[in-house]
Image (cartoon, rainbow, N blue to C red):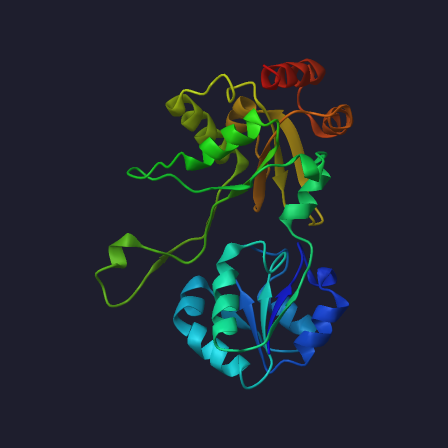
Length: 286
């Protein structure tokens, strides 16, 4: 059996009773390390679980998937994922390959950013399509994420933006060498994401829908002991806000319900928030 087990958002206390019971009965346990990070490190998890974990970065999963599946056909194997196992679409491939090989699998769900983002003050059923924002480079500056934000805004829906994570990123200088070298981990901030959104909106000529005064919410380390939310404009998010260490997420607001407006005031930087919320709703009602 191949188990996909969600670890939740922060630490060992987030692991479900069901997940813990299954892990202790598995012969091999992999810890996925490339789609999110937890508040605790691998050593702390191992001490709590009383077992040794196999760190599984993207390269290992892609190169060793056949081995993982073969072993799961012979005995119980667990694949641990921060958040919920299906929040990241990258794990779907393993499930489909298990089905092709007639290997049974089971998913043990847990909390993830997809539902915990409700803590920012917005109602979950007012969200549209979630987008991922990647780091721009000198030669690659995609704007497709902004087009999806625009589509959500036109429908009056909020947009959850998941921000890029670069873990074990190979140094370009080592591509032609026998020994690979890797760059330090990078995690996109809400300031970087806001800046890219504003530049994309200008390039796409949609500043009537996304501009300096567009309201957004920065979220950092949701579910951790020091989680933080800040509600402000895209311009201030880009230029002034520092939410500290990762992980960060960003929400671009859509049409705001009166209850959402009241909730967002808890963490807003804007003294004229009521006026900004009114202007936001009027913009989306045109």
